Length: 161
Image (cartoon, rainbow, N blue to C red; front, side, top):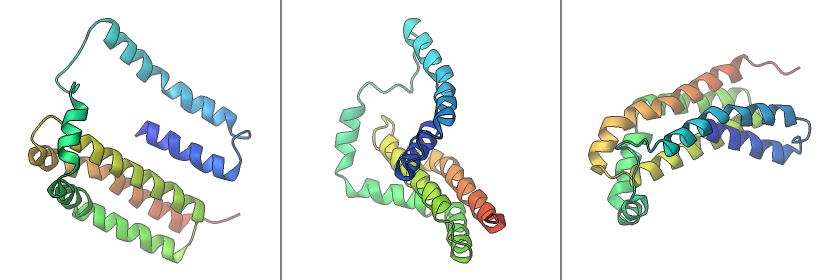
């Protein structure tokens, strides 16, 4: 999620040509990746592994990529979740009343990228596809639901200067 937030902020700054003004912000965000990188280096140097590292990601991905039933299941478990639908409707209604283009684009890009990354991860998992979706999709979609609900409320209370 941290990388998705960073990437989205970078894209929006590129679009607004404010990258030079916000260089301290980007340096701070890059520093937040240091603990992650150090942990990965430590794990690889000590040969620490777990069951979640998938050696055959491409094989699982290619076998599931062309099956339409997999996309139907992803749509059902991720996008038809009642918490997600309620927060999406609230998000759209709040931006219908008060339009804030930058905030809407920012949250929309984050949501789309997050759902695409989740779909890619689900398609490449070595475990049973239905079981994986059934057991984890409701928990993972709460992140986007909270994000949309929070920024929907923020948009309603935001006053332009």
